[in-house]
Amino acid sequence: MTSTNFPRRRALAVAATLAVAATLPGMALAQAYPTKAITMVVPFSAGGTTDILARIVGKALEGELGQPVVIDNKAGAGGNIGAQQAARAKPDGYTLFMGTVGTHGINESLYRKLPYSPLGDFQPITRVAMVPNLLVAHPSRPYKTVKELIEFAQKNPGKVNYASSGSGTSIHLSGEMFKSMAKVDMMHVPYKGSAPAVADLLGGQTDIMFDNMPSAFQHVKAGKLRAIAVTTDKRYPELPDVPTIAEAGVPGYNATSWFGLFTNRKVPADVLAKLNDAMVKILAKPEVIKQMAEQGAVAHPEKPAEFEAFIKAETAKWGPVVKQSGATVD
Image 1: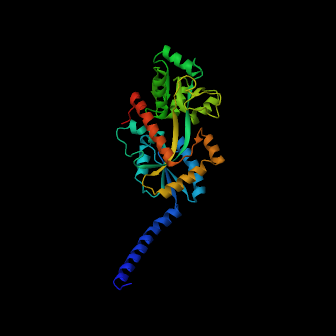
Image 2 (image 1 turned 30 degrees about the horizontal axis):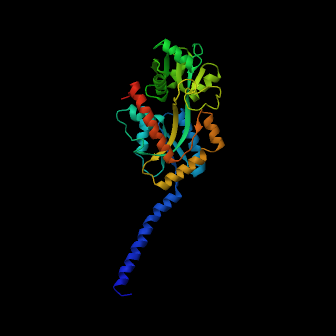
Image 3 (image 1 turned 120 degrees about the horizontal axis):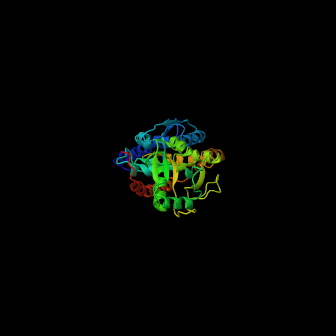
């Protein structure tokens, strides 16, 4: 070895050592994640289905990851306020977002300009749960099946009115999809939330509603509302005798409310993998499945790529429905 080559080789060795050392803090950080509390942003107020599911998942995540999970309710603008906050958070895996069919399947078509990109800003972790809507009617109405409802609506155009929790919601758009596919003319009656809509339905001021399962199920069990059909492609386990809309007369009909967990799109891949692994384990636990079932929800763990493909399909499905309905918010 010549005296001129030795310094050069030594310099290269030092540079290589420094390069490896520079990666160690990041590697250690990823391996240690999480080392502090995690915030889960919920874009709706406390007490609703999104919030309840977030708290079930958050509590289970604490046990799986060994760190507190803080629920941060940021309601408003159809979920857009909370989504915007989460989208702007530091991409370190310490801010999670409980998204819905609204924030990540409908709002892109409903709002002229979103303050976030559903898939540009967000990295899907996993779908958390599927919640069917239930087509219910006031018991005094003459139709007991989907076919009878369609026949009545066709003979009485515009005479059947259906309540919803507001224009552009999954409840409203479930009705619009039904109108389109069943070729019937029904009147939409929007309310400011599900509670007043259900109240008027119970009182007989409206005829039918495509309500979320958690709020409709209790009234069906009490005999105050008549269950006609579920909106999903499979029957609901707790109502095995109630058919799907598809099998009862509208082939291909499938409208489901769903909830999923997201983080920033720039979160490191190994942190994303750790979050997905934890969620898959959580959503397979009997106690979590039971807690979700009590809310009318069905746990639905999957890989990030599978969830992302589902979101793209949902966006493509709901876009034309929003357009045909004429629903706008801004």
